[in-house]
Length: 124
Image (cartoon, rainbow, N blue to C red):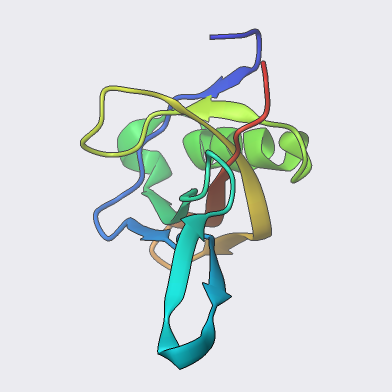
C-alpha cells in the first residue's frame, strides 16, 4: 500500500454495496449486439455506510470516536483517496468519499456519521 491515509473504523450492520458495471454496447442489424466492459476497472464498488457511536460506551471523550470518524472524512475533502477494508473482506480497497458526509446527534447521546465510499482505481 502507498502512503495514503488508512480508514480503520468499521460501519454498523446494514452497510450496503452497489456495483454498476460500465459496459459499452454496440448494436448491429437484425437485433444482434455485442457488449464490452468499458476499461479494465469497469465494476467499482460504491458503499453506503453508517457509523453509530455511543460516546459514553466507547470513549471517555464525549463524541470522541464519532468526532474522529467525521474529522477524518472531512479532512479527505471528497477528493483525497484513502485505504479502507470493507466488511467481510481481508483486502483493503482504495476509496474516496462521494456525496454528503452527514453527522447526526440524537437525544440518547449517540452520534451517527453517514458517508458514501466509492472505489477508485488510480495508480498509487
